[in-house]
Image (tube, rainbow, N blue to C red):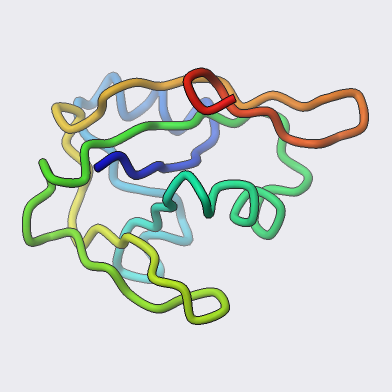
Length: 113
C-alpha cells in the first residue's frame, strides 16, 4: 500500500544526500513522521501547507516500513499513517513535484494528478 509524505524541496534533497529522511521539524517534535493516504492528501496540503509553493510528494511502500508504521486517529477521527522512526529511501517508490493551478488549488503529480 502506498502512503505519502509531503515535504519541502530542500528537505527532500537533504534526505537524498543522506540516504534517509528524518522528517520535518513538526515530525521531530511529535516523535513520528506524518504520512497521508491518497484520499487525505488534499486535506493535509490545505491544513498544513496552504502557503507553500516548494513541495515534493514522496510515495512510500507502507508495507516496507514494518511494525514502525502505525495507523492512528488524527484529523476528524480518521486513521493516519505515522512512522515511528526514520524513513529509509529504499521504501520510496517515486517522488514528484506538487504544483498549483492558476486558482491556487494544489495539483498532484502523476499517477495521482
